[in-house]
Amino acid sequence: MLYKFHDYKFEKIANKYYDTIRSAMNNLGHEESNETVDINFYNHIVNSSACNRPVIIVKPTAPTSRHFALDTMGYANSSALSYTRPDINDDIEQMDWESILQLKNTKPNKWDDSVLLKWRDAKDIKDDHILIIGQMPDDETVNGFGFGDHIKRMDMIINKLENENLVIKLHPRYKNKTLVKKWKDAGHHVITGFDCIHSILPKTRVAIVDNSTAGIECLMHEVPIISHGWPEYHWATQKLQTLPQLENLVNDLSWYRPVYAKQFIEWYINHYLCHDIKTTERRLKEILNAN
Image: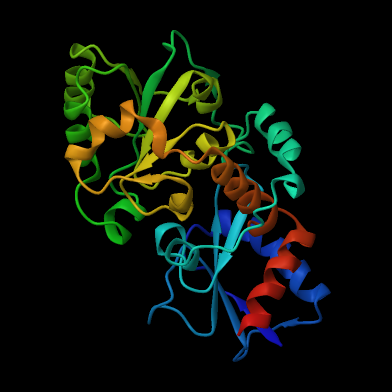
């Protein structure tokens, strides 16, 4: 089988993962070519007229800078996983939770190979808080795949929970002094810098997300999640269908399925994502044998 890599966007990011995929494809007996090929690899794209087909899409993701997903439909909330519930191992005794604990204790993130980003432990975080996680409003997963105004939805959620113990963690690149001042004046703890989420989650009662990869870290810390987007991990969250549901959901966590949430994130990290040549070979076999 012949394959080819395409520099769709974020070339420097893509090339690191392409090297791993190239080694895995070669180990499986396939050959790279610049001619018409059997498989086209793209990063950060959905399966559409913008790409040559057949296609496998490459997308870096949490929990570390080494992890990435391979999919034939898209990435994040446009991936096949976001549409089809996975068949995961429901035998709790077979689950390798120890590996997740070991990974969690290193406080990883998907930018942990950056020499420029300096992460710090968060300070003065109150116990038993509700964590609201924001994304960049121009992030394609909330503005293109998801539709609507991400910041407006987040503001409506914060207004609805105005009397609750809230921690609002914004994307470090997001700047909106007016909105941040409004939330701080209302008495909420607003995080705008490079505070490590692993230092926040031990004190989190429940998290509210749209489609952030931070939900992966929440699941690693066994934090219940309410999601109002359709992240790949929404199978292990409580879906927020309408705003009037919210107050009851944050105060009555009887909907939380801790065993399934642990099973899901262990499967997702250890048996679905790629992080080296061996795991990439495994995932490629799954995709290529299914087509």
